[in-house]
Image (cartoon, rainbow, N blue to C red; front, side):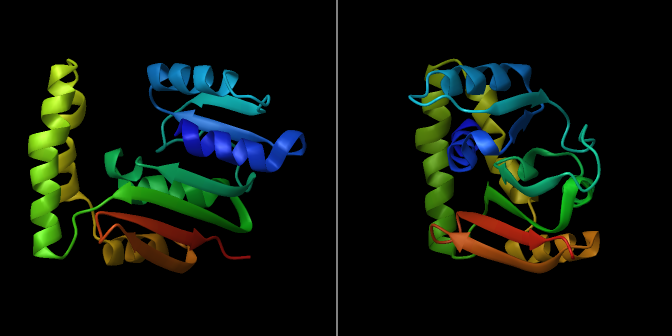
Length: 178
């Protein structure tokens, strides 16, 4: 969250407003600290909030991004509905997340990487529980085509899913009707 939030804040400068939202107070503290260490001062408002119940007015934002968060919400359609609600008419949302690749060789590579590199490295740092959930969460996460359908059901238009890294990640881009 913090890297994309910082990049957005650099783009809008002092004339725009960027909100960094996370469910975890600890993650927000880390993001805020990193932003404060930036070479240029960044205008970011940090908000601890649930993606299923955003504390913002309807039609408030010109754009929204979500990085590696949609896979972790308890109710994906409700989270998409909240994004739709807070966006201004004509505004877009871009949602980046990990995915299970359709290609069986890439899928096997991804699983090997998680099992032999990511989780053991996390375990050595005392963070196993924070990373062991990734594989089962990928199994439950809707495919790109399913995400497009969910976004359309929520009311988004011009919905496209772009696979990245041989399908191991993807970006869902959706627009609120004007």
